[in-house]
Length: 505
Ligand SMILES: *[C@@H]1O[C@H](CO)[C@@H](O)[C@H](O)[C@H]1NC(C)=O
Ligand SMILES: *[C@@H]1O[C@H](CO)[C@@H](O)[C@H](O)[C@H]1NC(C)=O
Ligand SMILES: *[C@@H]1O[C@H](CO)[C@@H](O)[C@H](O)[C@H]1NC(C)=O
Image 1 (cartoon, helix red, strand yellow):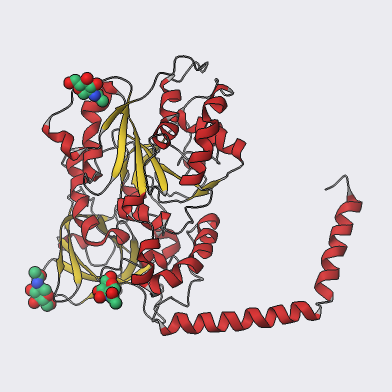
Image 2: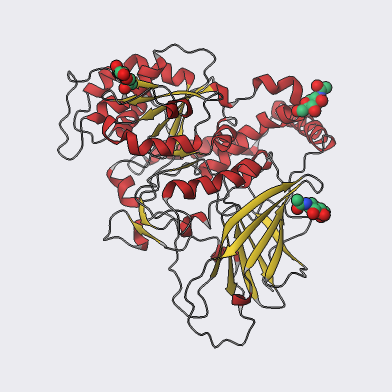
């Protein structure tokens, strides 16, 4: 632009011309748009869609997410309103085919992760292995069918750090396409240590037209990883989705494409290289989690972005997400809230106990925390660094998103309550979830205010809302209810009411 001022000037000129003299035609166009808009609005309200009018306070959602959901809301409104007629057009779990990248060496240990989320009679997909494994036992019925990847020794691999299995894993997309399965809308790739929350995966994919080219996933948590690989790459461990026609297009060129990039490291950067050749950018959905971190995911899971939780990864590398149990048991515990209200899983809400001067943060289906003092929402929505960066030398500068330190002040350490049980009460159409105090040593605090240690139990009521994500992203509100039970705090969580704001008190 700089070296060609003439050009940019003429563009500017063009712009001003267009803006200053709206022709009659554009006027007519505007009127038509206006009428269409009014009638759509009317339809929309008469169908009792409860969209919130205060969507300006959502700050966490990424631009890309917002624009994509805006585009697709147009598509969702009619399908939600005339549900029965259009149900067959909606993407369902059965339209997805999974490709799980595995290896014979690790399968025996890793298969437990797949077992956590796999539903044998409702899902389609395969586990792709490099070598035969022991099979035919009972637990094969709770796992996807196994397949052996085809030979890749004629492909070149020159990366010194990586493993040439990357070529095989990258080709899972093509090999799955070649199976010629019917009624497929999306191919979803994941690792043997990826755990999907399948209902949220469907919710996310439903927003996009599967007849178009889409490559959907997310980046690494680590800024440096994204610098070394690419911010435009979907990380394989977090899982990614490729629409059917794009997978077909990829299959036609993938083997030639892979030969052009022998020096790349992994399988997902090989996919990305071919996507770049096809000209298809990453559509970022921030609920896919690569989790390139060490330590404890607690800080991330208690301040999840306002987007459906789609996947977990690297669960072998981080601590179990619930204390005092193994990794698989900890994941099993999440299955209960997942079943009751998957859309709300890990969604944060923030409220204040004004009489006791506490801030309460709920991560639905996972944890609740009580803090002494009143903290603004803009602070509470930032993940605390209970986790370590992928590259140990980088700290808070190692992320392209905000983090905050774990407080060491004796009065500011949160009281942490972990999910212990959840149930659905059909007489109230609400779920009740229970969170029990996790004993952590607290140093004496000399602040003159109520001590949260008297609270042993947090009880949270919430009306499940499977259509939560058909609406623009907005954090749920929470309210503290009166409670007679000693040592229990009772909280109601749900869509914010008219005029309800989490105001500092
Ligand atoms: C539409 O579907 C709902 C459940 O999704 C069902 O309760 C209702 O009876 C259906 N209505 C018609 C007209 O089929
Ligand atoms: C399953 O086991 C049989 C032998 O029992 C073996 O021939 C076959 O390759 C195995 N399949 C896989 C995918 O490992
Ligand atoms: C369901 O809610 C009703 C009304 O609050 C209550 O009386 C009943 O005990 C609840 N049932 C369960 C199983 O919690």
